[in-house]
Image (tube, rainbow, N blue to C red; front, top):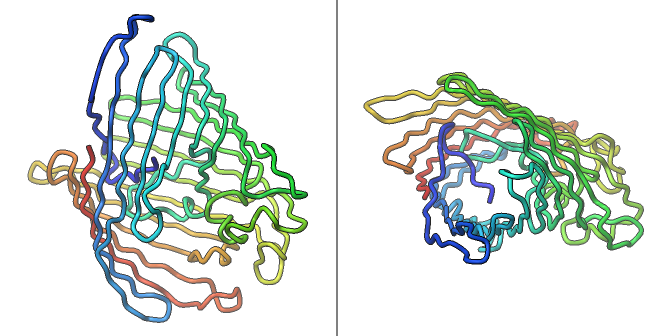
Length: 345
C-alpha cells in the first residue's frame, strides 16, 4: 500500500491483533494491522482560469500482515481513493524468507516494483505520475549490511507480437544507513518497459495497450536519494525513459516522446508549543510528457502539524505551469490548494 508520508518523521503504528505459537515449529506467529484515513478540502484554478473546490475522501488504506511461520508471511492491503480508485486489493504478497538466517527472500503477488516516490507533500510527485508500477510479479531479493536488492519478472499490460507471456522484468538496488543525527538512502530501479507504468499505460491507450501494432518495449530508469540531517531532510528522484517511443504510440511535437520527470524537496522539522511541525518546499518537472496531461513545472510548499498522536493536519500550495503552445500546451498557469486531515493507525 503506497501510503503517502504526511511528515518527514511520520510512522504508521501497528496494532497486534493476535499472537500465538505454532506447535509444529515453535515459532511465534502474529497478525498485525495498519491503516490510514485521509480527508481533504481542495481548491483548483485551472489553465482556463476556471475555479473548482470540493471535500473528498482522498485515501482509505488498510494493510494486514500475517507471520505464519519463521520462513513465511503474507500481506494484504486494501485501498480506496475517491474519484480514482474504487475499493480494491492494492497489494497481496506471499514472502518466503528469514532475515535472521539468510539475506535472501522470494516474494510473489501483486506489488509495486519500480521507483521510490518518497515525498513530504500531500499530493503525489510527478515522478509517481510517470513511474508508478503495480504488477502481479515474482521477485527474488536480498537484504544485507544496508544493501537492498531485487530482480523481478511479470506479464505486463504492454505486449509485443500479440504474445501473452512473462517477458517484462526489472531490478532494484539501494543502500541505506542511519544514525541518531544522520541518515541516507540511495537507490535506483530499472524496468524493461516503462510503458507499463500506470501513467504511461493510460496515455498509450489504457485497456487496449496489449493490442498496439508494432509496439517496442522502452527501457526505464529511476534514481533517488533521501538524506536526513537532524531537522533537515532532502529528497530527490529522477524517472526517465531510456529511448523514444514510436510517434504513433506516444508523440511529442510530432516525434516519438522520451518522457521524464523529477522531484526535489527540502524539509525542516521543528517543535512549536510541544507539537511537531514540518515545513517543506518542492520543485518538480517533466519533459516530453504532455500526452500524460502532466504540467511542465510544479512548485510546491507544505506545512504539516502533528496535532495528536498519529493525527496530522497539513496544508499544501502548488503552482503548475503548462507546456508552451508550441509544444501542444496552453502556456498558462494553474493553482492548487489543499488542506488534509489524516489519521494513521
